Figure 1 (spheres, rainbow, N blue to C red):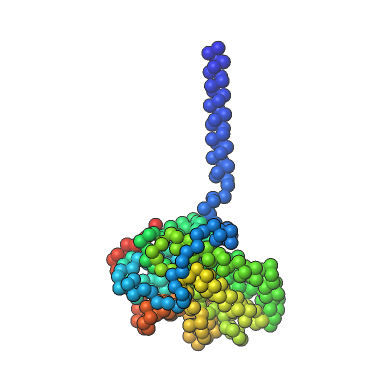
Figure 2: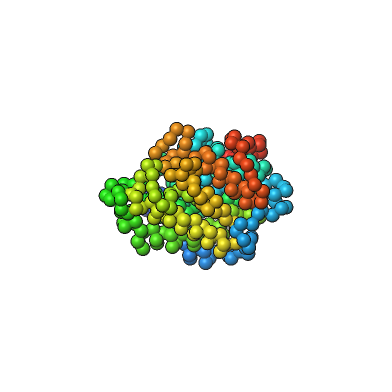
Length: 351
């Protein structure tokens, strides 16, 4: 009887261990529910589940409240590579995989607004899904959800996301360049990717995704003023140049796609009642082919960003546009690096 009891007890223990191991293995092999970087961007059902919030502004071009401008500001920057500054020195190590510059436009904005604290969690490659879930970088680094940088003490949030959803920008500067040789004077990329199954579908979904992002930000930082910052003009609306690797007929189409991303950002900002800075409209004539471009072309250049991203000049100019709109006062960039105080530097650490 003792042997029978011992055997029965041992069997139960082994079954319990097997169950625990099986559950643990299943969890280790299952996708992380917080890892949304594989394309699990927010959608209309998520927007419907979130409480509707009263608008912060009637006009997306409104300046910040005077009371906020007169006191120390806790500022958080969210966004992708057009905010982060890949390739621009100095590159920050928090983490290296995000390719985030210490001299990007959020850093200049923090300086010119003379904020009390500043946290920059912009990251190259970020989609709208990276705001709410972990972002997986090509080197395997898992970047925390950007929304974790927000608190109930946050006063100001800038956000610039959307161009990487459905690999839209990657298609424009990568795949479109690869297919240009098929028909250098034609529009092979628009023919292949411009229909309802490609770019059009991605752009149709973008306003809702951005609306979810804005509402999530406002819920996470209920005291913060939210500012959506558009993308700069990348491609010329007519013509082409040696800095562009796309087929001649695809250039104007590519410029139109970037415009449509900006319109989706404006639509989401208006729907959610927050501010929007139209960088492309204010920076008209500074595309990659212009005499004074804000963005690099297809070739790498010394002391410049990675291809297709803002030059140091472009970063300063975006910061100037944002600062001018938020304060209602014209800002003249000094040309020097951003000067951030001790408290700002301490708040820069990744949470």
